[in-house]
Length: 111
Length: 116
Image 1 (cartoon, rainbow over the protein chains, first blue to last red):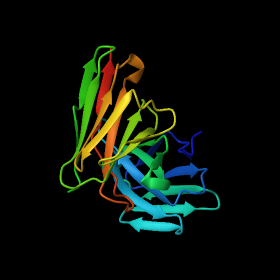
Image 2: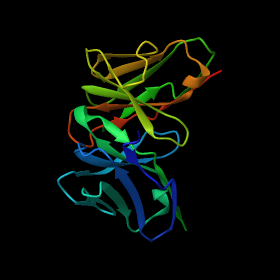
Image 3: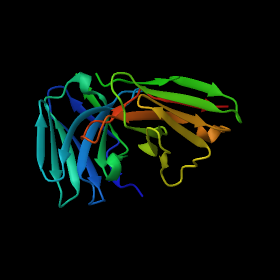
Image 4: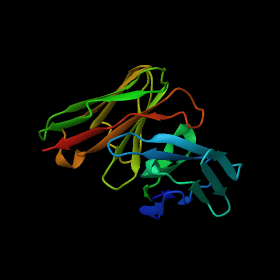
């Protein structure tokens, strides 16, 4: 049972445009949502998070939106840069600081 | 800061042998360490959670006798894959957390295990 889903396995965006990565979840007990960036053969690195009591969090080029009623969150990257090309995982925090990860979206930012 | 290392970065072993993977937090003390595995094009799946000095808590479906986890100090956790078989071939990633603050789960670079 996949509690966190990223339905788009890949996304291609032109440099300078906005990248929007989506994530859906099913467990209403999750209290925090996080986005991680991962390069091949490396561990994920933390990007940005949002509490379940908020609907938006912004950090530089990265903004995360949470729609709790729809159990949906999204990561916006603007403007997108070639260095943003990576796999992006959304994750949800449950009890004991445990994270449940989505399946990831491969973002490719083209020149 | 907040660097987590894993050793080895890749390992190839024969079926039936055991393999030990180390996870170290280099510049902080990790009260909790997590072990994940990732199959190609799939998500990171949490295998177990370990707290220093206590037994690991395994996720449902993970064999604790096959995947032995030891968290002997605040900077070191080890995962031993016992009697490895080809289906255990995967990418194993650890993470370390100094506390419960959100985002404070720092990941190692992972270990690629191939069992022949």
